[in-house]
Length: 246
Ligand SMILES: Nc1nonc1C(=O)NCc1ccc(Cl)cc1
Image (tube, rainbow, N blue to C red):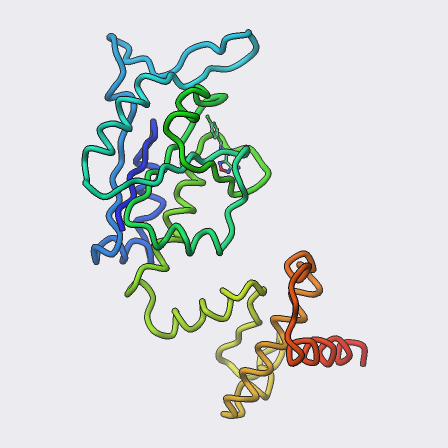
């Protein structure tokens, strides 16, 4: 998968995705990341990329023309069709379902804004999708872009070892993850649940599913709204909640 990042600070996304699973996916060529700076496509001695906003008020707006030229160069750089994503608080909220869809695309272009915004005419003419990582305001779109790169990189074939891909499948079905434990079995902070050391894989899978259901019910009931739980899941959840009462 190829991702092109358009940003006044392309190195920020490069550095945020150069480590761990994402860094390895890049080293293995599972993900190619290219940075582009609209300042390289701006005119004049100051290579102006922003200017005052019409209508008055504080702040500057990113100019349409340097971005247009930059995006033309990005499209030109590879024959694969692009899907242009603009990161902003006005976008649709990113979730794992959309991450999976983005991860299956051959190319993504991530447009990172700075200042108060991007000239709306550029957004209307060039952007396929506006995405938000949450209801708060960052100083620029770069950290949001890095999150998109991270989430799609780990879904590339070969990015996670087998165990990792199994682990992410459990989370993928829209529930919160179950608790995890490792050595030592006994510690001042508590003991590892016996079922996890029983070697009974069916019981372990059942316990993990029950924990995921109970946690989701307690912490993120919104994830269960409008979701038809199977009979088995409903039983697991009820049993798990009852156990908390005891
Ligand atoms: N929340 C978010 N989810 O995605 N992006 C954000 C965010 O705050 N971007 C900051 C931002 C975005 C565009 C411009 Cl022009 C300036 C600053």
